[in-house]
Image (cartoon, rainbow, N blue to C red):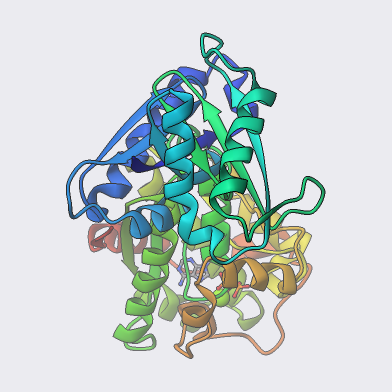
Length: 389
Ligand code: ATP
Ligand code: MG
């Protein structure tokens, strides 16, 4: 008897021509993510992926935790894998489930036979195994309507699998199958959630963060690194570019009308992010904006920001309420970090009365008061690179 993890793939993508690409990517992600949990064999068979421990130090709890965060997985189970022989299956089930059965009072057995060579039908398997378990654990009753546990026996290509719990996977599409995009990441609540949401749609991430020392601190940047680490548990590794933004912000403050500080700053952020994105083979930008949340997130302000963008800008939170965003940030474990109070460059020179309906021509005229091109270049030349694993 051996414990393995069996993984069920996301259904939708499986049906298309993408299947092979999807599966290969997913296996690659699983291998990579399990690297730190010990030595495992990861292989596809029919519509599942089997993960089996190879070495003594392979940590199954850690592996299950890591697998729960990989996109492209609909569900997974820790299961006992055994020989496809009905007697072996019964014995293995009793042995494997003994601990679990000591904590429950009723069960039922369901069987799935994808290997049609197996000499018992699904109902026969369920009856055989159910009967054996009922005899082995007289204090646990069979209840087909509302059982405490549903024991599943699956007869597949490689082996028979027995498990009593199916755990919901992270869903989505394997990271990398959707191309690459650059997330503009602040230390706030929203942008880490936006990053997570696009990774879920198969996007591989590159991160761009703007820092304005001494107005923003070293700690503010460390906070962003910590947020990205947590996002990376889902999205996989990424490169973070920290852009020195102080000079541009001081120029805006010194030369532009206060009402336009934020909007001009955001346009410059997009310009810089876009250049870094292009260099890194990213085909889109991602932000954590939500319509109407602040003055720079009105339709008019977004239009002025988008006017400088030549690549698509994904704003996955655009139609979400703060409460909805917070609930995702709690789920992905970024909330507690996001609410630590460190200054972001966005809040350094905030106007008292920002324009909520800016006119593009006026914004451009204000922005043209500064000679921003050389400053953009200088900022890009001085980015700091941090690898997030
Ligand atoms: P967040 O919670 O992500 O900070 P927010 O609601 O506070 O978002 P803003 O601060 O106006 O809104 O920022 C809007 C978006 O601009 C952010 O979601 C993020 O994508 C980007 N952004 C803001 N500040 C920075 C920064 N310092 N570096 C990189 N991107 C930033
Ligand atoms: Mg913010």
